[in-house]
Image (cartoon, rainbow, N blue to C red; front, top):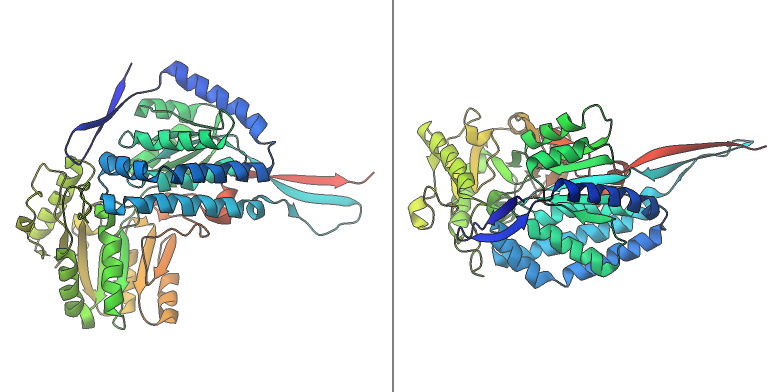
Length: 461
């Protein structure tokens, strides 16, 4: 028996202990998933939707419990934890609503003597590996559309947030989902690799690090199965000279500091037109200083700890290296007594005098730090925004929507925004370029990654 522990970033205590699945339990889950999928694929789309909607209702009914557990597992301030429940509901209901159109057969033009069409066939068993930072919303991106498409799901959640998988199971059970259609397993890294290699797994969805994505590709190599990899980012934003500062400052900074910056699509690099740089910076410093770093179970806290002390120390080292290389830090960590080396609590930070030679401007930080550079033109902003190994999202803040859209077309990112950031619309494809990954979730396009086309060419006798 191997135990995994969830160490709460709130106070360093052991919050959850769970046994990892044995080889026998893994074998049972795979066998059940295969058998259940044979039956589930024959269930009508209306019935799948009914059950999935009932699951959402059961899930939302657990809201208070889910919020408290979320805070203790990964440190999200309790005042903001409810947003994850709302996001789960929005995405689940959105993908359920899209299913009928997305999964409908493609009817071709009449051809004398022939009937021709293309159906969307489920892939089979889908392994979904979900992260801790948005544990419900990242999981639902793949779980609900996979099940709606006629697949069965085995969810492996982060060891930091094991209760999230268990609560999703409880919601599906309450909705009457047939046994084996959705299952979760607490797995070691080695066991995850073995499951990916198993011939019964026909699809893998992974959200996590670049190294984790490479692991998925290594283990899936040669099996020709579908994979979806969402691997993070170093997302940029550009503040044009014509911007509405009253809207742009809170908009972009919330996108940088929400969840203590622990978001794949958090704004981690900021480019501000030189004409308004000083005015923007003055407002930005004031905005950051009003954040309240503290115990996330306190409703007054707006900035919680990072997921673990080592993650906070990684960001501290990035900040220290940048300052040593000539950057200026605008926030005094001494104003935040909880923030100290070796602690998961980290003071927010704004840096100027940065450039792309510094790790804080090219390495994913995943923490509450934002580097800001002045630019003299749209062209310079585009060049710097594209100067990255990542390409998940990018944002432009401007009053000129046509100019913003023109800039967005030039940006190397899977999703581009004007005048907002850090948001997933269920009707838009969620995808990345470069080291941000491959594949797609959400939207009608996302259903294509969870099905395969089957062509019918029927000649009349």
